[in-house]
Image 1 (cartoon, rainbow, N blue to C red):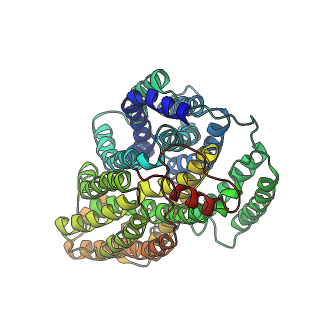
Image 2 (cartoon, rainbow, N blue to C red; image 1 turned 90 degrees about the horizontal axis):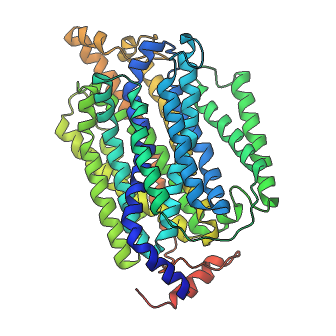
Image 3 (cartoon, rainbow, N blue to C red; image 1 turned 45 degrees about the vertical axis):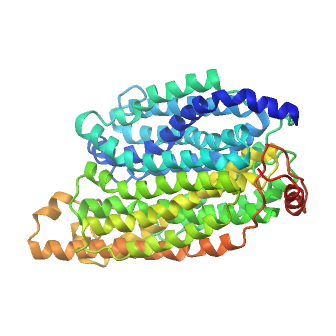
Length: 531
């Protein structure tokens, strides 16, 4: 224990420098998807392939989702520093390849969209390592009692990235080539790579060097099949088509076999024993619901601002500032409160209630909603997210042994990411179906809003009365999505109510293992002197 305290003291002078490098890495992973969304119309204009352009986003999300538990487990086995730096390199290589897509280096000019989709998957694989690595490294460097403050800062960076992405993407799209949406990652990632390689010194934990490649492959196939179902179902293929039913069968079989393999694997990629811990199981479900509602519903705010409120792509980023402000302020405040008091149970409960209230307010959006009113609604949503973002990861990490920290961080990130993947797909289908039955369907170039793009120029040319009908149908479809999001977030405070307040450890010691580990840890930690 004395040696551990000495090692912690030796690392403390580098904490701020390392944190700066980690913030850059997290910013890259979060920022890139938001930047690309504003550059997509320009990319489609150059490459064509309007039927496949959504895969530019889906490939990245899919790569991130399937890779997070793998990166987390690799960090547990081979050391987090070398694995994290490897993920940075993979992300930068993917970024460079994306920037060169369609340039003729890898094939004909007509293959540009296919190349970009493939390279975005590579970039997503690296991004998965960035997100899980940042949280796990903070878990190595900082004991749980102090961790809330630092994770609050990371949550703040995530909030800034959500808003800065459209702003940066709009500027790049308007003033530079769309390729710079990817090239901009190279100098920033290079700084983070050099900085962390030189200054990051992590404690070493001895584990057997075995990796469950079979489990990793089965998990990747199963999750990929599920994401394809939610992406293609009701759009590219009917829900009862052979393609969708075949994917459903593939997902079911691979995930069942995955569960059997994980029970026997010496070093499982996703240790099922973690879910025997009540807090970990609950916070994983909360993370899924948070990702489902947050990433799924938030994609429709810029759409509402650019169509119904008439904002430009760049200005829609500015209109998201209230959301970022609420999330940033509360994340930092909650992090400091957890560090000071050591208590955290109330925050996910309050966050779930406030987030649900924010989404309920957003269901009121219509043609007559002013920008000030919608900004107030977004502040409420941001406050709720601020209560939840870092506490979910903190509770997950505090529920496991130190040797499983990477797997726990990977699982927490995984469930949030897979929730976001499902949310984007499901809410997109709900939005499209609702829109097809409204007057706004005629404003879509694909006919009925299915598989088409919203033609903003055509919308502006409509007579005032017709435009009012179209905007009414569009805002109605968007508010309908927020109603669906409420159905999921209302479960968050219910689940959070059953979280047990296990005292946060004041050092990175290992809680007792076993089926009764949670109760033993609580009893042991309860005898420790309060910090």
